[in-house]
Every structure is written in structure tokens, then in C-alpha cells.
Image (cartoon, rainbow, N blue to C red; front, side, top):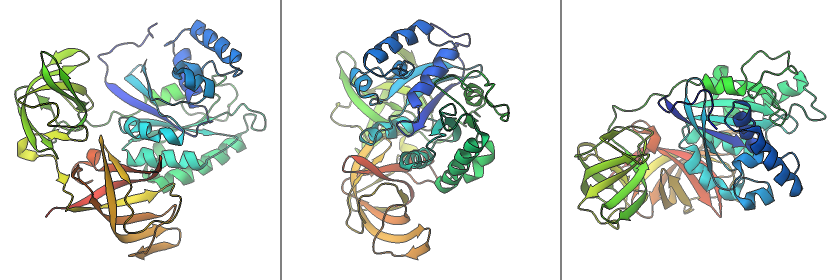
Length: 431
């Protein structure tokens, strides 16, 4: 089924839905797609029947996004699902980010592709640990625009109360200030809604006469187009490298900045290999060039598939992608979100930056900030602290400074199967 706004030549955007696992992300997406004419009622009815049989009545909408059988049985979102969706101005890809901790790694690659995020907060539950983690992640991962969806306004105990809505808005506002969205607060819509019933998702609700802002659909369509960093030097993090018979070596990735052109030579760092771009393919079509936001596969002459790897970044030799060797350091600012115990110098968790994953050592704690204020050279860090740290990678890693390539300066820190912190690289200390 196609919607009345379907037109793939419209500007393409990525949007991610984040927030706590039970606050209705999948239901919101299902409702948005159904009411805006992207999926048909009978699909929901079929899903509702499946849901009811599984003892999950009312989950029909959520099933639209949760395609995996295991997810349906557990009622949670595991993989990152992609759905296309059109508004009057834009052609969107919805990236459904999993809420469960075990799946945050998916979200790191998922959210980093999104320029707009919808943060869900249930009116009956307010802000909790996961809402916090996702707000911080959205900021660190470069989400430019936020829309807050105050869901579950219909449920018993909330009953469309403006006071309950205001309470939730107050909590979210405090969180967003903490997460670094403070300067944008005037432009962040906070929508009182019921995704299950459809209020203020696509259709304006009669239950909120006191609210005169946009519906979720209107807020998404009103999102401002981010600037494409076309005039910056090329940076293309490699996601996978394929060996395709009859063609050769084909690296695949999403262009962050600059333009990839056929016939030019690119250098891959930290592998430090150079090769000529023979052809570029996008959506199964051969193109001459590709721009920021484009997912591309490109064929390189003279390189074996084993010469380069995921985590490499491609650029041109007149402005090579920066990388930090294992005997070099960089200074970064991090926010601790979920650290089980205090950590100090010597802690070596795994950093996820663009497509790279490298174990990195906390070499020096320079300054920490928390509710109590600032402290120079602290001896340890604990949950909720923000800190300036000197890091040393255990092997070479491509990363850029916030002031030159913010797109490649961000990282998430993972340990013991969960995201413990998120941060940004401020200064690379080359030898």
C-alpha cells in the first residue's frame, strides 16, 4: 500500500523512536503508519488476532514493527527494524531503536543514523532510567531535533489530565536540560497523546482542548532539514567489506561528510590502504557520486577484501581520516549513565565510534563534574558523573575531533553487555 504523499524524490530523512521499553514505541509507530495511510487496517486486524492468541491483546499495532517471532512472544523489540514513511515534505526511514539494554548496541548504530528523534515518555510513569539513557544517547549520537511524545494520556489515573501532562513535561524538561538540549527547549514539541487510541498521533484529539500544539505527524513534517556537510572533506566509515565475484572488493558504508566520486583514490584509515573508486552503487543503482547520508557500496581497484575492515574510515589523501595509534592519546568528555561500580585509571571498556569497536584505556582523569560541582584529577568516577578524560586505545582507531568532524567524534562506551557511558572526542594528541 502506498500513502498519498509517496514520492521518493523528496528529501530523505532518518527518524528514530527512543524511550523506555514499556512506553509504547512500537505502538506509536504502528499507529502513525496506520492512520497516515501507510498500512491497511486489515494488516493491523491480522496482527491483533495473532497478538490476542499470544495473550497480548492490544499489541496489534506494535506487531507492525516487531517482525521477529521471538519479539512477538516476548513483547519487546530486539532488532532494529526499518520502515519507510512519507509526510507532505519528506521521505522518512523509521529506525525503531530497541529499548532493552542488551540491544543498545543496535541502537548506537541505529540512532547515529537519525537526525530526528521521538522520545517517548508515558504520562503515568514519567522519566525513568531508560528515558534518561536514551536522551543522553540521542544527544551524544548527534540527533539534531527532538520531539517529545507524552504517551498513555488515556489510561486510568491520568485520564487526559492537564496537570498530569504538565508534570511529565516538567520532568522531561529537567532531563533535556541535563542532557544538553537546553538551548533547544523552545523548539521541542511535547505532545499529549494516546498512541493506542490514536489521539494526537495523526488525528488531533478532542480529549486535549487545552493543547494547541502539533500532532506527532505534523511535528515530524515540521522538522527542519539538517545541513548536509557536502563541502567538508570526505569521511565514510566502513560498515562491511564484501568480496563479490566478477566485481572484486566492495566496501559498504554511510557517507558522513563530503562527496564520494567515481575515479578518485581513497585512503582507508587506520588500515592505511589506498585504492581507486571504480564504481559506486546506491539502492541497486550505479551512480557517479554520493553525498552525506547516502548508504553506498563502492568497488575499489587493487585491494583485497582482507586489506580493509569494518571500523576503517575512507577519505581522500589531501585530508586523510584521522586515527589514533595505540601509543597516542585523545581527550574526551563523557557522561556516565549506567556504571555498576566506581571506575578509575586503568579501566578498559569497549568504545563504539561510528562503525569501529576498540578497547580503550582510561589513562588520566582530568576533571569531573556532578551535582556537587567540579573536581580536578578525581581518583574515581561513579554514575551520573561527567568527566574529562585522557584515553589511550589498545589498537589504532579512527576518530575525529568535535570541532572538525562532530559526526565522527562521538562514541558510546560499553561494558558487560550494556552501554555504561556516552562521550565525545575533544582533542587528539598526535605524536
